[in-house]
Amino acid sequence: MEPRQLDVPVDGGNLRVLLWGTGENIAVAVHGITASAMSWQAVARRLPADWALAAPDLRGRGHSNELPGPFGLGQHVSDVAAVLAHLGGPPVLAGHSMGAYIALLTRDAHPDLARGLILVDGGLPFPLPEGIDVDATLNATLGPAVERLTQVFADEAAYVHFWRGHPALVQQWTQDVEDYVTYDLRPAADGAGLRSRAAEDAVRADGRDIMLAPGVGAALERLEDPTPLLTAPKGMFGVPPGLQPPELVEAWQQRVPRLKPVLVPDVNHYTILFAPAGAQTVADAITGRVNWSNKAD
Image (tube, rainbow, N blue to C red):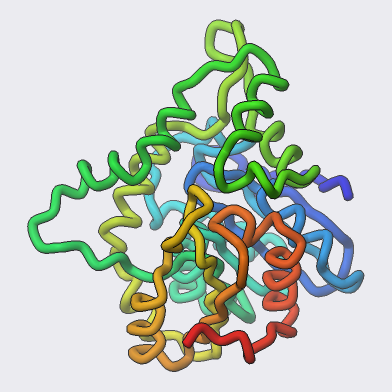
């Protein structure tokens, strides 16, 4: 299932968007902090024939990596709103990880541009202790991901080999994962070798915004429609806890009854999009066929 390409005008240039399918029902799907539009391919392939999925490469990632700053959640909201307005419809809006925060804030700021919201393993504010050093916490959290962005690999095979050893993916390698990995590559600055397309300054700016979560709690409290929150029991390295731990999910569901948690079994932060069962659950949530009996309570 080869995606088509679309460029959408935004501040500073064009935002690259990948399109799968030709159905009249449209989903716009937003990726995570060091990811790309290709993270949504497995979900797109599981949508019914009357659906299409559009996923932007966020500013500073994928084939939008040369778009200038400023970065941060507010800029991404403006960019995603431009994609929604360009596509019309209005679409269903979904987001994974950082993309869940962006999707939530976009839906809150532009309610007429989307007809539904799906949060996938993201979207809840992280409780930070008073006086915590946000930058130090960010370095501890994003350290391995940021280190990858600085590495240069000899060729595509070397990058694939690197990713195949990732503890969250080593038992769940699929063609969709490999397509995601190879899409991320670009020539290094000196032409010797390959490196990730994700820009380190964009990742750091966005990570700090997620830690501080400006406006996220208020946006959750303003939700007007039942909103699925799909969570993984395992985190970024394939082991518990997940990035949205059950106690945090329960606290926000009690505070915001319109939030509808669904725990997706046997997946981690990556495979909730890539593994067959995870991708199917996300696709079912987008099309309104999610199984509420799997509620995370």
